[in-house]
Amino acid sequence: MAGPDVENELLITVRLNLTLGNNNKYKNNSYNEYNDVMKGGEVDPTMGTEELQSFHDALFTHTQPFTIILIVIYILNFVVGLVGNVFVILVILRHRHMRTLTNVFFVNLTIGDLMVVCICLPITLGNYVYKNWVYGQVMCKLTPFLQGTAVGVSVLSMMSISINRYFAIHKPLQAKIVFSGGKVGVMLVAIWLTSVTAVSPFLFINSVTSWGVPGMFLAHVCEEKWGIVEARQLYNILIFLVLFVLPLIIMALLYTRISMTLFTDDTHLFATTATGKPVVNGSASRLLKQRRKTVRSLILLVVLFGVSWLPYYVVNIWLDFNTRSDSTYNVLNFIYPLVQVNYCFDFGESFV
Image 1 (spheres, rainbow, N blue to C red):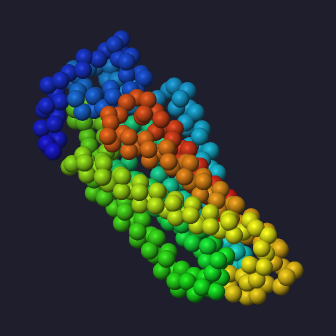
Image 2 (tube, rainbow, N blue to C red; image 1 turned 135 degrees about the vertical axis):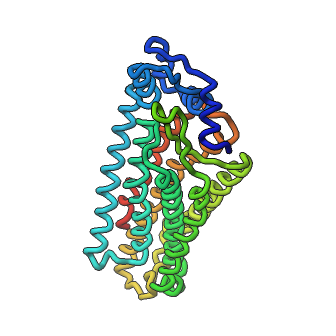
Image 3 (cartoon, rainbow, N blue to C red; image 1 turned 60 degrees about the horizontal axis):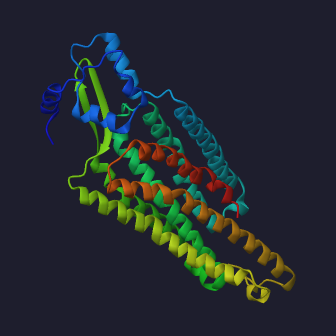
């Protein structure tokens, strides 16, 4: 890629003769026009201060109701997600009986959710409202990296919970061995290492690109820089398969098997708890009802994850093989906060 000086020299040869009367086309903040300006045009060095400011405001800020609605959605997600997930951690820490092995995975999931709510969500909203990237090179790399890590931690934690539930119901004696304290610790480390490794390319391919006339007008864009387009396409498909499709299939199969067992009248199948302790006849019915409630909640959590993330993955993969347009750009801006609903309401299923 050419250096900044070469890029500026090439860009200056293309003038955008903008005036206060002819820059209305930028008021709509078209994604394609934005890219054209950033990568194929240049601000007229002879522009007056008012013209330059008008161009800057029109290009980088949004005033339409579309943005106001989006801001409200993001703020609600932030408040609910922050309060709810912190509440989960505090409750589990304060109540000893809540410190179960299953809830350890929920705490792990909650930590990943908080990463997105506190770091990624505000920056994503800020970059949408004001498109000039002002967060620096480090956050350009860390934001998608933390987002991807949180996604991996969430889905792998949910998959671990489904495996835990399967063993607790179908193989309670083995569950005590497989999900012992030490082995659960190893599982947690594996979850984080897998997630971090899977999204580590973002630390290398994401960087800030600057465009404009130094001293007059300088815009910064955080973008992925893949040397080969096919590499990006292959990577995103692999992430989709490894961190979405495969875990979702495993969870669907396990919960289907669990449901077939739980929703029968054979309460004698539950003569032991997950720790291998015998259950007296009077407690079997209560245990069965409790487990049915637990499975319903967990299935709801998995469905919520699948429904919220599937559109995001589909749109992104589609964009990898097609040219971005205004409509798809706006769709992504609305899909992302819907994805955040998954992070904000995971805490609602943490007390099962």
